[in-house]
Length: 290
Image (tube, rainbow, N blue to C red; front, side, top):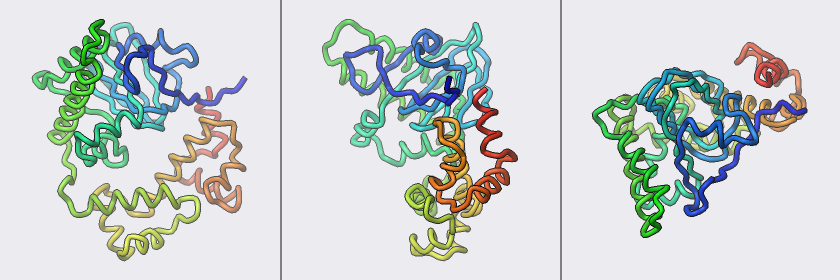
């Protein structure tokens, strides 16, 4: 039987609203019929997980994070995710599709959306102070989502969701020193987008600098200012994460993945992967398939 990490599609248990759902965190075990949520799985949707009680850990893209009461986890579409449930763990999960999220762009600036889910720049974890009323909005959204009265339900849910997104971004702004107003942030976002489109054809930082109309030295300076890494490290980080996700979420062999990621020789890919992870692709796959 295949031990690949499953890709989880958005499937609402409530058919009255399209593209969004809120449920109790402790009910995820009951709802997960086709996979075990404590094992790594890749989400095909976005999510906010709010822990209102309990201390545990939450795996996000192969990194385990400590969570406690009032911890909020932001998950982007495509990330690898795994829970560790304990008897006292309680909270909420808001799940939403990309199309539902994009509708919010009419209300919220795209920069807010970027900051919430830019995993290279910011931690997926936010600790919520008790006096910020975020938990109350989650409570209210849960009540309204399952309210039997259908009058204006979609508008009410959309409004509460917008408030929650705004409150979360406000907290990130207060807790993390990032460069919202920096002239470098926009160029860094462009650089990331270029990597997504061209990483299979080139890992050369000079190519990306020229595509942006800047020098290699300037691109390095931008990356160091924004993320404290070189341009080459940013490219390598992206490719390694793509390799990890492919290795654990499909039956693909490392030899096939070699060409899919733009390497011409399997031995080169194996050396590259081991250099950055300490493991061969097959060792990594076996480790995360247990």
